[in-house]
Length: 227
Image (tube, rainbow, N blue to C red; front, side, top):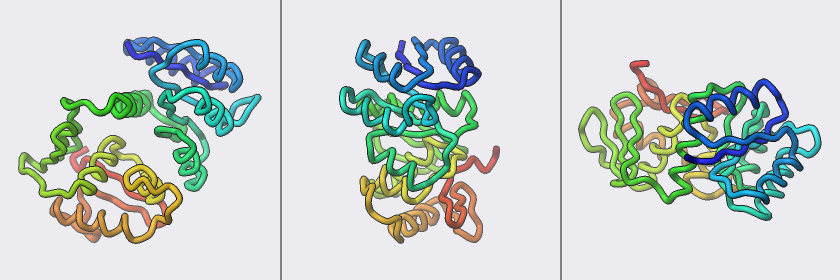
């Protein structure tokens, strides 16, 4: 039973997250302040922390740094802020993932499961599916409508990262930070080129997208064309 610590000052969101995750089999505790969250992290071993940025006593970014000073527990940021540079800075400072409010309970649980898999070093049986795309993370193989895709390791990692966040717009800067492990590098043509290669192998193009959709200046998302 994975344990989850929620650090969230909004009562409605805190109660909703606590109830949903508890019903899903998680061992859940919640606090409403940053200092209370840091204290709880030092008192018990947690599998994951959900950390809101807009806390009443300390900014969530500072709470993240304080937690990182004492623990390597996986942290998912929950935030109403949608600033790309700030999000990448948080990922560089030690956050494992983030979700922008408002979010669905299904979305937050999917992110929790993905982060827990990565924290455990990967689950050889973990399979991601988006439409006709099937990704076997253990074997590092991806299939389209049953046919094995000839992907480089970087293309596979890019596709898997997007598949863990189906329908979510992911910035190029985040992809550079999380897939290329270059948090301070510019989101130059590297991502564009790999997206182009990936599209070609999926049998689509920028002019006629099917799975991979981009929004100029915002990012890229992987969608189920049948949804």
